[in-house]
Image (cartoon, rainbow, N blue to C red):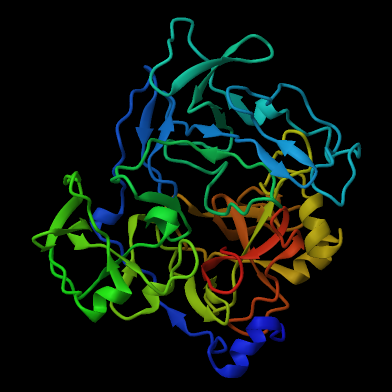
Length: 456
């Protein structure tokens, strides 16, 4: 592992942080109520609906069940990309040159695989408007540059993706790994507001849809509490601060209100009283869940990875690991063009990945980054984890019986890897390898809980 430096070295020297031992931790077993999330019903035009997804919660979908996405404008290193409000800049024109948005690359360079490259519209089909359609609620109609009409929600133009094949698929974009600043302008699924009282919000994470309070403070529940009754008082309530319900608040759906005293009311979710943790120092913290008997709250838990995987403890937190306990990595990429297309899918240009994993040499890439192989009988019980067949020479999809093809595990239809530089469980030498710490083009460890660096 990397030698400790800075604050990390000080913490290790003082014994405040223990060196990761590769100890395995169990995945949480979701209850039936944690498999889906309630949402607020909003007016929708005819032909649209809300469907559940495993990772992003409820999303809007078209009449065929295809997830709807937005492309919000984002500030990049050298300019802006994405859709301004009430406008679409996704055109039916193949972009051939780099845009210079992500230094150190200048603009005007040829993009790879131009003979195969799709237009923005070919990958992100605009959700077009029927001639008789009318705006409804937050659903509005915008005019594209070719004078066709397109649906927008909350001022964001809406699209579907060719990467989604069945209702409930959200393979094309996610809110889970957003980093900001050094990442491409990402597409994200669009859905109805979560059914939470004012002052609460829900955020997508790899563990599930995390419940947060104002200022993005984490919310916790205690095993010591009874149903709709708090046993946290006096000194306990100074550290675990009850989530107070205002006098005007009323129970709704899975939300109830308990009385701590005649004048003090506390929110409860699924009959468990809610608290914040006085010692949390960062937003969306998981620190309180390290205290025995206390847990972060999720409106919906993400499916556990398949059985060959485990969670390993490292000096940086908890990371996904393969059957041998070795750290698992995912690859992410968005090209430096005006349309910011993904370059981490099986049918996208592989030059980006090969440049990072092997300096352009496919053989070196395979020596350093190993696909996580799936056993012949392996199968997944979720949509976000699948077994795919891949040609290791090209990095593209292969036929099942193609000579040399490998059956490998994939997360959101993208293969996952281990790194040859990791010598033992709890090593994560391959983390943040690539451009801008692996956020724009590179490899990142699959953090379940990330302690001392930016959240995974």
